[in-house]
Image 1 (tube, rainbow, N blue to C red):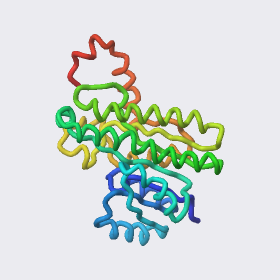
Image 2: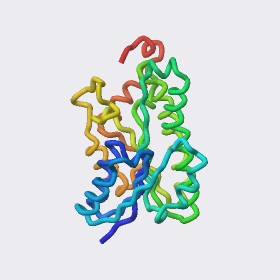
Image 3: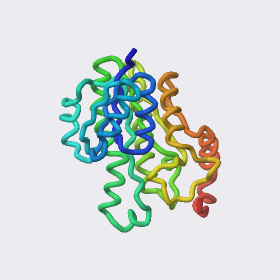
Image 4: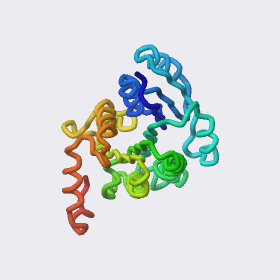
Amino acid sequence: MTQGTVLILGAQSDIAKSIANKFAANGHNLLLASRRSSNFGDEISDLKLQFNVDVNFYEFDVLKLDTHKAFIQNLKEIPSIVICAIGLMGDQNECEKKDDLRTKVLRTNFEGPVNIISEFSNIFENRGSGTIVGISSVAGERGRSSNYIYGSAKAGFTTFLSGLRNRLAKKNVHVLTVIPGTVYTKMTSGLKLPKFFTSSSNDVAKDIYFAIKKKKNVIYTMKVWRFIMLMIKCIPERIFKNTSF
């Protein structure tokens, strides 16, 4: 039996691909949206053949805000679930020096996702049903010198999702905030990641799937990151500013 249709924004990311597999395996039809469509045909065919679900791909550029309404209008159907897996970390040192990269990181992680999710929020509110999932980051929990441009955008995104959840709570629209810790992906390749606190994209996908089923509001993945970030946020600023982690 086919479940509700899932739209995945940023479908080319490692996490998004794992999410697609998890939901397809559980009978959900998929709408996949990404800026790059090259080589996606084989993956769509694999999903269809392996899981016997309907899969459609759409070109989508989160930075082109004026195309968002048309993108929604051109979808095969309005989905039951929208998952925003869009993100761009960028190099912190480069972001400090180059205004174009700095702006791209801020817009990709905050302005663009806020705009497209807001469009779906209005549709879901009027319909009286739906689930919105936003993937944020522990980087948004407290500013650190190593990634505060990216982190500030994610902090704004987390706050946006919190306010949206508060707005839509009485409208039967579920808003889930996902706050991953470190994850092994192409975006983090080359970084030194703590082995015991780093999850896989499959772990994130599994956590999201069950969090939707259980109507969770905010999840950390791995769960230990909730406690790690609680401790980090409790460090007084006069001490924290001299740390290097």
